[in-house]
Image (cartoon, rainbow, N blue to C red):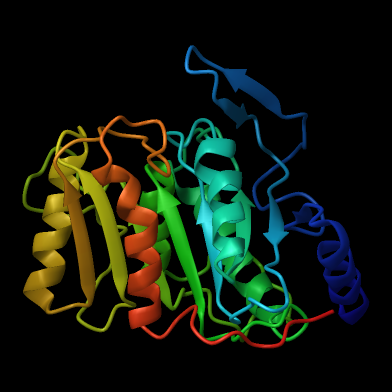
Length: 290
């Protein structure tokens, strides 16, 4: 296992090449087929038929590296992944801020007979423990590992923050490592409500007053806005750590906000970075691995 970790470290440092999450087939998978690229009228690249989940690491410049990392979870309804719009674009931005960004390509589409998030959650938990296992070699503080999610990826990030039990076999290297992020960034999250309930969160979401701090950004004209408002209400009632930014417009799927005509929605990345620093993350540059 040490040899594997060393090899992964060298590969990522040199080329940010994708790292397989699992040594063989992912849990519950019987085959590993080719991925498909999906393009719609908006010309955004999406991928589907992901059976071999991976991580792609974006290291910051050594002089800027802060020792903080963020696992980035693109959205796509758990059927596709908006891998560029809600993935690589954010990873490049984070790395410029001194944050090590780790892009998670999790399994889609939804697996028949399973909750929509079951396989992606396994991938996200595995990803968090892999990041912590490599923290020393990647120049990271294992207590400064966060998660950022968009739309369905926001639901995945929110579920991960609750630290659910792992329901897959784990190697000894990863067993003692926590899969719970130290902070969460939820951008226009979806699926937070229990069905059509206006008063109950989805049962897989487990928040308490001691949950990791959360940053939330959403537009009022997002069809999923009511569930974000419900989350905000619940977290505030618990006196949990939350900074919520509700924009008057922007809809759903605005990414970094560059494609929207209103200037306000474009401010969320800067607000998020400011919040991270206030929470003690992404602050003083620290030495990174060569």
